[in-house]
View 1: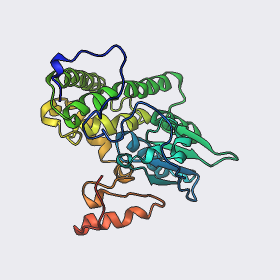
View 2: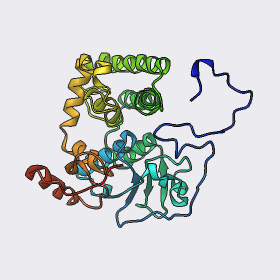
View 3: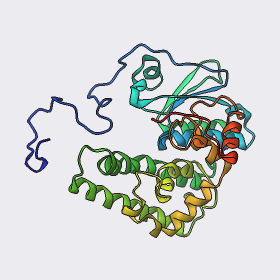
View 4: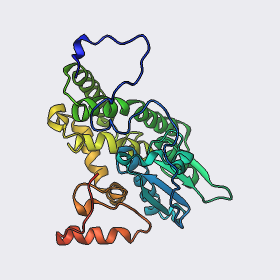
Length: 297
C-alpha cells in the first residue's frame, strides 16, 4: 500500500483499485441495483429487510416494544439482508431503499404499500402510526426528536469513522483513529452529562430516542462494539453505563437484538423472524446450553 503520509489527491478522483478492508468487495461509487432479485413477502402487515447491525437493531427493538405494549398490528416478518454478499443491491431491495442500506421497511397495513427507509424515519413512522414512544407534548416531542437526530448525525463518526479505522481498515493509521476516538469520547460525554440528571434521553419516559441510541452507544458502553471498550475507557461514563444496563434488561430489547442475526452465540441468533414463537427455541437453547446451529456473517 502507498505511503499515506505522502499521498497527494489527484485533481479528479477515480476508482482505480479496491479500497481494501473488510467491506472492499461491496463498496462502489455508484448507486442502483446490480442484480435482479425479488424480495420475499410474508403474511404480516410489516415486512422488514434488515440485518442485526446497530441500525437494524433499532427497528427490531421498536417493533418488539410495540408488540410488548399490545399493538398486535405491529406484527412483522423480518428477512435477513446479507450485506457482505451484496444482497442490498438486488433490484427488489433497491425498490424499497434506493440508498441500498439496511434497514428497509414495507408497510402493507393500508390499501397501498408504503416504503420507509432510513432507520430514523422508520422509527418515527412506527411511533406515529401506533401512538407510542414519541410524546405528544410539544416540548417532550421536540426533546425526543432532537436526541433522535443527534444520533443520526453523530453515529457516522462512531461507525464509519472510528469503527472503520479502528476495526476494519486494511492498516492501522494513527491520525484517523485518534481523530475519531476523540470525537466518540466527546459524544459519550454528551450522553453522560445528559443522563446524569435524566433517567432516559428525553427525560423520565423511555422513547424512540433511547431505542435509536442504545444499539450504538449502549452496546459500545457495554464493550460489545468494535471490541473497543478498554481503548475508549467506556466504564468511566457511569451514567451511560446505568442507562445502557437498564435498557439491555428489557425483554423486548433482548428479542430485538436477536432478529436478523446469524453470527455470535447460537442462542443469540434468529436469522428470520415471522412469529413470536420463533424466539422460544433460542430461549430453550440458552437455558439448556445447546447449540442449535447458525452461521456467521
